[in-house]
Image 1 (cartoon, rainbow, N blue to C red):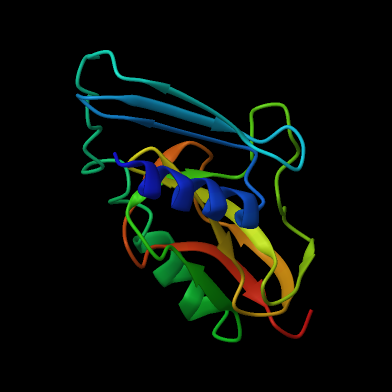
Image 2 (tube, one colour):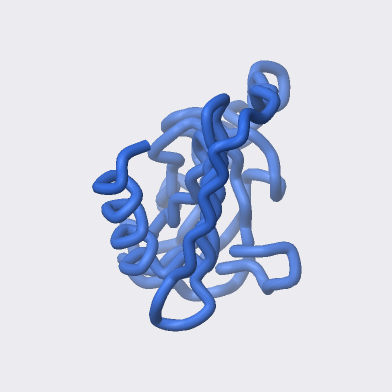
Amino acid sequence: MKAKEIQDLIDFISNSGLAEVKIETDEFKLSIKKYSEAPTVKLEAAPIAAPVAAAPVSTPAPAPSAPAVAKEENSKLVEIKSPMIGTFYRTSNPDSDPFVGVGDSVSAGQTVCIIEAMKLFNEIESEVSGKIVKVLVDNATPVEYDQPLFLVDPAG
């Protein structure tokens, strides 16, 4: 990774609101933690073992059928879908409260979860305003592109 790419990544992290990002490849390990206004960077060029890719094949298969049933029963509900393949997290770290829960009101642009893809943590924002009716995915489970994550009642 070149210095310009690292600086662009630091700028992105600073503006995203994320507290920590870790990237590991065969050639390097990069850890960026934001404790104050200025993020700190730690870059190790030592070779590391290749990360084992978790294949999200069997786990997400049952999830699409549940939203289909819920959608038939509640046609007024709007789905918040995953914009990418990755691992779904309801919190920014294990000690934090979930971004949103059932019964919470959300507004368009509000962060509802994080999806980790290739060691990058991406904040997912709601595209609709309303009330969270159901969380369709368990914490720390793989998700597919366009998989429904939440059901929102726009009237709520």
